[in-house]
Length: 124
Image (cartoon, rainbow, N blue to C red; front, side):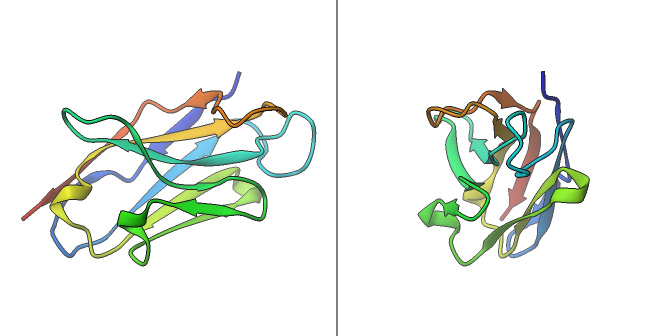
């Protein structure tokens, strides 16, 4: 089992910034067969489906939602088994519950583990 612990959510005014953190209980991107090999952030707004925000799809590749490109940056610290999401120029439409996700399977793109979620609220 892998535990993912998110932190950093909160209430911020439009135009502000927040940084989310997701700490994993297993090593990330080491290439070890048991290591996490993909990790990222999804969000779910009220009444909407969960959507990808940003992710490391591999040790060397990232993927961002079009709506956050240029404003959000995903980064990681392998030594701390932690992935970060720096969110700048926040908009009210960025409001939602942000979930960290991680994958350990070697075949397929589905994420295997999810965090409990952290609320991000952007006021106008």
